[in-house]
Length: 158
Image 1 (spheres, rainbow, N blue to C red):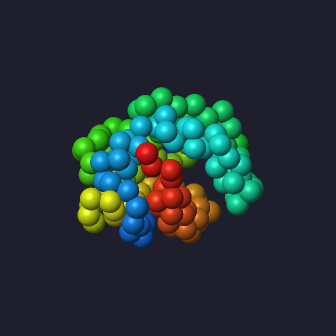
Image 2 (spheres, rainbow, N blue to C red):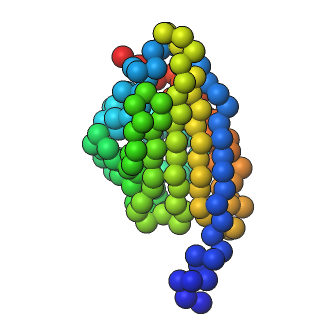
């Protein structure tokens, strides 16, 4: 079986989070979420350990980031790289994966103002993965997208 077989067995799956309300101005939220250096500070302050506690089979190490991308190692899966590929000011941040994981994904953070001091946020994940990966991780991705939305809605926006 060549590479063609592997590609044909991949399927696109869509996961959408619940809508969350953030008690902050849309521009502030966008500026924070569209810079991975902000995420790095938060992840390195204990979030990675919390993820490992909840899902012990996933261990994240060697987290590095700059404004547009981040890279980390997932034990047993390899190095994951995530890059911001598009920013639509104050509305959308589009992120794509690269690196050596057995799945690829595109991820959107969508923002909409409620008023000057509140913003609605919804996450959408398109993941291309094999049937085997979907059977192992599909329900976790569905649960995870809502947990991520919940976490992002509680970040210390400034």
